[in-house]
Image (cartoon, rainbow, N blue to C red; front, side, top):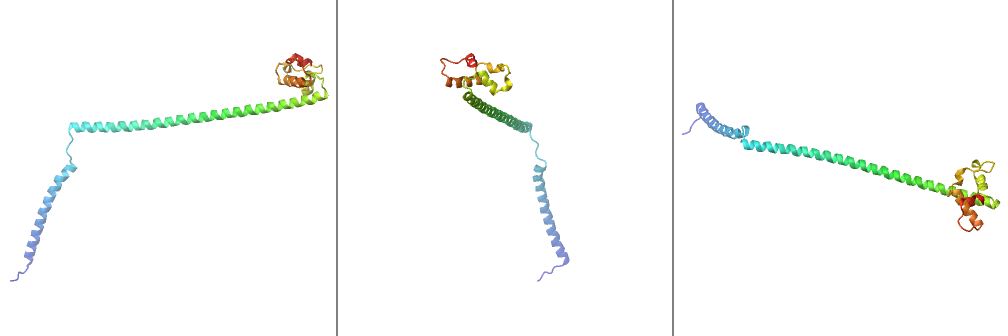
Length: 187
């Protein structure tokens, strides 16, 4: 015998399937609510857990503040070291400039002494018996008067002019003992 399917039969079967699915869906919904309740509404921590969490948050805040302080300290230290380095560089440059200036001054002084000595040698070749004052009058006429007086700075013992004259005349005229400024002037 062949079963024939009537619309009432089909509807009954469909309703049965829907009821079974609805029942299973309800079970799944209950399980989901149970699982979701732990996620959505987690259990409240105990007083000890709250205190521990507060301490951990404070430790993190302190660590962050300390890290910021360390960064600031390193920044300041770097700035100070940079300033020290710049000062040292300026000091080294100034020292080098002073050394260069001193060297240039010494070179200039040596060239001036050479000019003085060259003038003296040429002067004594033409006037071998000339005195210190006569030579200075020829070398620096602006510092000599017509009466034979000379600027008093040329009479200071140990000045380069008197030393050059003493050395040049000592080579030309043998003199016993060291030559004093008085002897240089009178020579």
